[in-house]
Image 1 (spheres, rainbow, N blue to C red):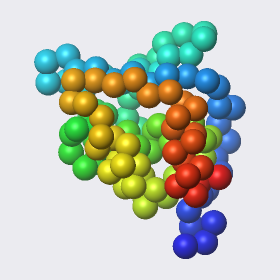
Image 2: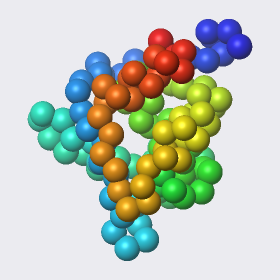
Image 3: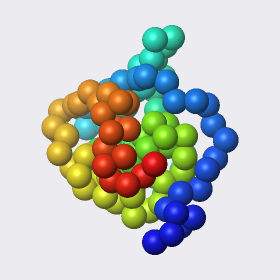
Length: 116
């Protein structure tokens, strides 16, 4: 796969150190990004016609969350292949009840996965 197939650069904000926090209220998953300046609840971009983001939900919910987290950490739009690998190797290992992921750790995973 060529670099062009793996990555499409999109103009977005510069990456900042942040934490991604997921928690489960009843059956509903909630995911937030925490930075030095605030807290933002993350919502799906409707790419997969998904109503919510969930690290243990449907394939569409996991792919949407993968896309969102990778995009926020790298400022680049990931390929579906990278999203699928992220979903399997990162999201698939998170506890059902909740998680905290550091943006630096996600950036390291992306470098190891060959996403520069």
